[in-house]
Length: 465
Ligand code: PLA
Image 1: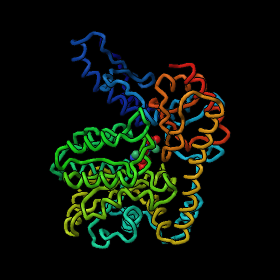
Image 2: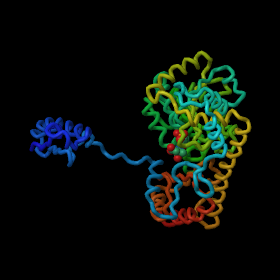
Image 3: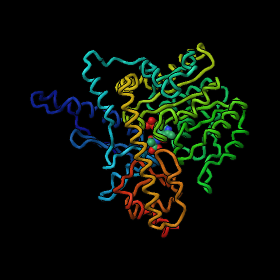
């Protein structure tokens, strides 16, 4: 069936003074006419493919995107989507790893507010584009923060650092660079790991394999499995490590175990890629949490490090991070940097200025830096205190099982050992939101909500297999 069209243009020509059709109506109608012509072809294919158009009723066509299927929500960020839809007053979001105060509120660090105020007051500041690699001062200070102020690699100019879009963007830029310029395309990631890792590296053109990491039986590190898997990896393969506070397990190698891992990595010429998303959040000390990375840099070998300021400076939505590549010589580092620019420019051209300026302001000022470490330690301590409170409450309640892993695990998350049915039960009956692998964000918990979570866990383990 041919649709009926009213021509606003004809109407306007006949009676210009009474013309009520806007420019957008005309564009709409031109599009409708074009589609009518196309519908002649459609008519012969499927008599139900009709187009109707009029300036008032609009028109309906089969969308060119009609075949697009709905994608599932993200396994972590989708938890927040579900939480936001729940009207229950007792609901609790322990999904995404985002710090909350004892009152359950997001926290902007005092030192961040202070830095922002300084930036706003400085009328000389402009909004020009940053260079492709970002804010030079921020990059220098970021390398210092993770590698240590006295790092020989920095002194020898063997490190190239580029500002990226938080941890995720740093991992992606690093992955893209390796996909283009490194001879081995295989990256080994721990099993389990942060759910975005396999997607980031696959899309960067790498082939993703896993190495054994976590032993559910001991709720600890499967060190033997890790050594065996890395030991049988092809020479030169890339290996992803969580610098500290492994997500989701909260299980980190000891310093001695890191040393063994380092020796194995170097003997097989495996390339370490550190994801440092929680520096300072694990122990409360920025230096202690950077130890694993620094061991690998101290031996003179090469590595990559992705840093995020989302958690340790609470700059989640500002998307501030950095990728550092430690090279053998200054000349190689500068050539690597020139190629990183070719990765970044077509992706997002150059990074945003505000968050990086906040970080640089804090890192370069001794007083602000000290203030930051105090606030950071307070966040880490509150998380550790939540671990003790939850552990004590489950013990007092007589909840079956050994819950000592809650106090042994490190960082933002507890990998509870609850299965997906138990998690679904806790969400349905207690409005507690967490990822289906049984991970809970300890930073989302407070003294007030510990009893509710304890009730939910108790009910889940006693009533759901
Ligand atoms: N690496 C690891 C190990 C992470 O856990 C996260 C964030 C990132 C990188 C990326 O963080 P960024 O891009 O925001 O700097 N993981 C969170 C959030 C906290 C998320 O999934 O995006 C999590 O809940 O696991």
